[in-house]
Amino acid sequence: MRRMVRVFWGPRKETPQELAGRWKAMLDALPALLPAASSVPTGQPWTWTRHHTSGRPTELRPDEAELAAALQADHDSPQTSDGAGLRLASQGEPGWEAGVSGRGGGESEYVTQAVVLTVVSPDGAEVPEAALLALIADIWEPDFGDATDDELLDALEDRAGFDYTLSHVSVGRLAYLSPGRAGPAPAGVGVAREELRGAGVLLDIAPPGDIETVVDAYVRLRDAGALDPLPRPMDRTVL
Image (cartoon, rainbow, N blue to C red):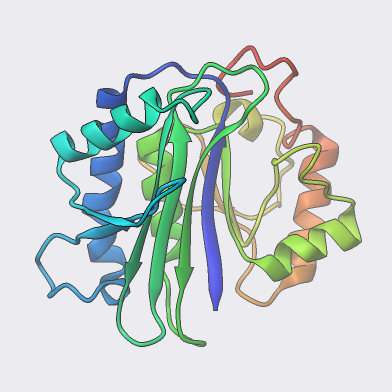
């Protein structure tokens, strides 16, 4: 099964060094939550495969200096228009893969910044989606986020009119809402979880396979204004 844990936010200027601190905190925490997603022995730091816009993949260790150098190189690349980002992958035990892609530090008024963790696992395997979403939301301080998969996104598009070309704001089995979004969220949509240490709310909306409840939650949150897109041009990081 392929699933995604995603967070999004608006303009927020950060240096490659500042971004490296966020990346390191995230990458350091992932092995404990996804031990099967790497071939590295338990307790040892992972070495990630870094994919580039052009050229062959290279290895990248989650060392802050190495991360900062990689982000600085991406920031300075003529192919980069704003901010800095990485695309990393890890091959684990049979049936397990993990990938992290993200771009931050930008000031564009039209390009949403994001971090997306993709996990491929054997059918039936347990993946701690709530802990993963809480981790990424606490580190990146986004506007919104979710734990979802392609089937859920297709259902939202087909049954609820979700159009990612107009707005990325969505929900999945779990949803993270920044304080400005949590305020108008109607009572009874999901259950607030306690994994989140920072601001905002982490909602447990439905168990895996319950597409109808997710669609209903999306419609109720959207109609209440909790899923309004950031204004364009974007003039803030969160709603």
